[in-house]
Amino acid sequence: MTATTTALADMRLSRAAAGVPTPPERIVHLGLGAFHRAHQAWYTAHAADADEWGIAAFTGRSRDLVDRLGPQDGLYTLVERAADGDRFELIPSIVRVEAGDDVPAFVTAVADPQVAILTLTITESGYRLSADGTPDLEDEAVASDVELLRNAFTRDAPGDTTDAVRPATALGRVLLALDARRRTGAGPIALVPCDNLPDNGGLLGRALADLTGRTSPDLAAWLAASVSVVSTSIDRITPAIDADAESHAVLEATGWLDAAPVVTEPFSDWVLEGDFPAGRPDWEPAGARFVDEIAPWENRKLWMLNGAHTVLATFGQTRGHTVVSAAIEDPVCRDLVEALWDDDARQLPGFDLADYRAALLERFRNPRIEHRLAQIAQDSTTKMRLRIVPVALGRLASGHEAPGCAAAIAAWMLGVRAGWAPVPDGIDQPAIADLDASARNTLLAALDARLADDAGFAAHVADAVAALEAS
Image (tube, rainbow, N blue to C red):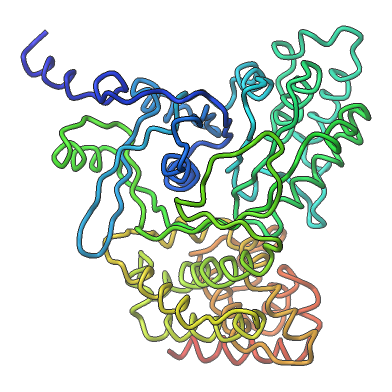
């Protein structure tokens, strides 16, 4: 071993090298990625009783983080990237990293009576729900898992299901794990979805109830009595990064060789509604907020931050921008965002939004957070349905116009036509090349038929398309 190799080995991050203790595994997480590490893991590390709450984290589809984080005992550096500089912090809350497709390990972890919480960041598409919020039985993986689990749950001697049954979907794996917890008498548990979905706790709870109704009456009854599903609103911009480049920066700043740093903004917000029957970390000192009614909070975040991001991502690229900080400085893009926020504010009467809007602009303008528009524009049709359409429908239902939403949808249409955002399923790109009345109606209907049927709203969209094309 050369002197250089020995020196690098001495700088490699690990709990022994850093002198960091290992808290007990009391939280299991599914969908390990940068956002979870910048948000829930960060909050847990900052809890007043952090030494009592370790996280066993399972990846989504990739093994990359297992290879990067595993040798570091789950430790990583969180880089808070402000406009005026970076702050580096070692996060110790993740104590074990496993591959998401290791179903036996996941089932065993959730069935551990010491575990009190299962958190999820599996992305919107990972829930595999149909338009009405129920499990999409037209999805081959969902249909296959239903049959697989039904057979597993009705076995006379199901003790081998942990090794023999391997659901393909995230919710299928969750159900298998919960059934193992039920069978071993491990006690109640809280499920905490942390994805950008309206009523994410309600959606998850209803989806699991539907699936258990199709697979196991016994599990359905146990879920109703022993599982609490917590709704959450989460907020912290965490862009994709070049991990190797950031590792070099961390090494220079801290002296640690970290293969899995995370870069995020200084701002963070977490609002939760629901019960934790087996206990939870004391997250309040870290800034978490527990409320009786989460809908207004999640709407504020989903409509204003995420809605503005979708508009900037789909339209900003048509004007040559690649990151949020550049797009928001474009007066045309900025006007689109402000108009959307005006509509949002009218649908959020319980909030004084002046400070929140100012904070959003400051966050968007941070030039050192490279939040790439191409990344945000992925799955933009679904994002428009969740972030823009509800505001438009709410305004129309109350007898008002929604010019900001109409302009946002027009911007999305132009992004789709230009190829910067994906075309909705079932629509051919040539059919929308001219964005004439027929094409606009087709795209509106792809978002929501009620918008396409509203002549006044369609006219606002047409005017906005013409104005944006001329800008």
